[in-house]
Amino acid sequence: MRVMTWNVWWRFGGNWRERAAGIRTTLETYQPDVLGLVEAWSADGTTQPDVLAGELGRHACFAPTSLPPAPDPIEEPGQAGATVGLGLLSRWPILRTEVRELPHPQRPGAPPTALVAALDHPRGELHVIVTCREWEPHYAQDRAAQTRALAALVTDPAFDGPLPVLLIGDLNAPPDEPELAPLRAVTVDTWEAGGGDPTATTLDSLLPYAPLEATTLIDRRIDHVLVRPGRPGAPVTVRGAFIAGDRPIDGLYPSDHYAIGADLDP
Image 1 (tube, rainbow, N blue to C red):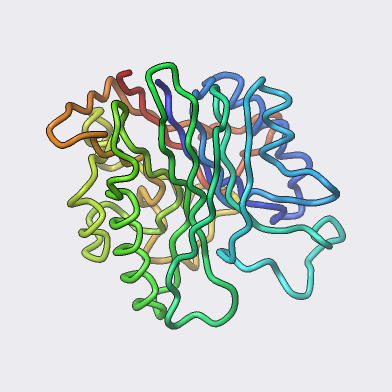
Image 2: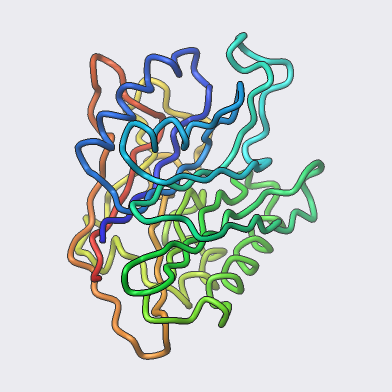
């Protein structure tokens, strides 16, 4: 089972239409069974996950979130009326979805969310959580509270079963961040388990549109595929881990983040 997550940079940058082809080409190459999308868009009666699902032969769902906030005022006409959200693409039918609000005691406005889905995997229900965690250092209370909430969510006994539980997305934290410890304590980091390079980054300062102002995150692996056993003591086997979307396509990098993925059993 190939699992990936990718922050696809919404309709930022003034080149989102041109970047769409690179996103599609990358996903056609890697063929994920499960893909979490962060900073996906919804606009004009459709969503970016739905568009990609139609192109790739997948099932899709979408949930709005407040991270990152959409620009106000808009930066270009294509952002007008568009929503920032989380997306999920699945090789298997999506049985049901739920949107969970995450705590935000400091940042004003609407809550950030986690998209929770149950997939109709041949071996049983596969539970997937897609999310984006607060990134601003001065919202440290939010970052810590959201980590605790996600740790509680991924370990919910309602998700127990024959398959592992997946938590994927942009956690806006490198693996050694102390605030991430409660979540790492209850999950397996598939990058580490799959033998990934410990110096790998998903937010590369060499990208032409790298957010260099994110000094605590730049050149770090801040996007994650985490997993916990479906039952206590059950094995989680990671066959390998990889970075994708790290090459320009037709002269453009597809996003300001690289995608990250892992191959799991089953």
